Image 1 (cartoon, one colour):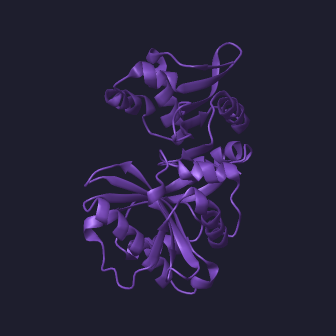
Image 2: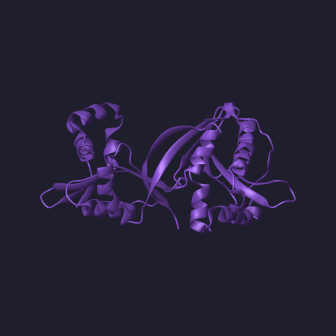
Image 3: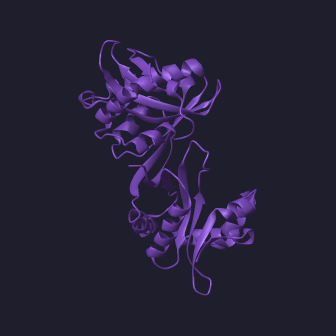
Length: 296
C-alpha cells in the first residue's frame, strides 16, 4: 500500500529520513525541524510511504509536483529513504512518477554520504535517472566585467526557431526532441523569447553560439536564470568565445535590470564551464549530487 501521511506523522517521517542519512539523533533533529514547518497539512500531503502488510513502513519520499496549469513542469523529489531493500524505494518512486504529471524530474541529494548515495543510486538509475554533480552559481549584474569585443545577438522568434535548434544541436552535439525543446523554454517558468539569444561576430555571419535565459523575478533588481549556454565545436579551443558570448548576453540583461542577479545550475560533466563562469565573477553557492530525468 502507498499513501500520503497525516500531519501528526510528519515528525516521524522526517526522523526516518534523517535516520537513513545516518544522523546521530534523528528524532531530536526532526523535532527541531518541525519548528520551521508553517503548514503541516500541506507538507504531509507531499510525503508518501510504501507500507507492507501490517502497516510496516518500507520506504518514503517527499514530492513537490507541478500543477497542470504551471509553465514549469518539473517534479522534485527529496527526503528519500528505505528500511530494507532499494527495490522498495524504486517501487514507491515508480508509483509517484505515474501518479503526478510532469515533464522532468529532479532529485538533489544534499548532505548525503557516499555510502548512502551508493545505496540510493540503484533505485533511481533503474527508473531512467542520470546521476550528475550539480554546482549552483550566482552572479550580480552590478559586477559585470568590461564588454570588450561584443557579439551581435539575435532574439528568438517563431520564424527562427529552427535556427536556434540548429545552433543548439551544433553546440551540444545532439538534436533536441520537440518535448525537450518545449521543456527547455519553460525550464523555470513562462518562456520569454526576448531572453533567448543566438550570437554571431556580425549580422552577415553564421552564429557562433547561444545563451538562453528566463526571469525568476522581474524588476530593476530582479533575478534571471541562465538555462543554457554554449558555442560551436570550432570555437572550443579556448574559452574566449564563450566568455564573449556570456558577457554580451549579460549586458542585454543589465540594460533591463542593472541590479539584478543571475542564477544557474551546472550539471554537465565538463568542469570547464564552471571554471569559465567563476572566472567571470560567478560565485559558487553549493555542490551536490543530483539525479535527473529529462524529456527525450
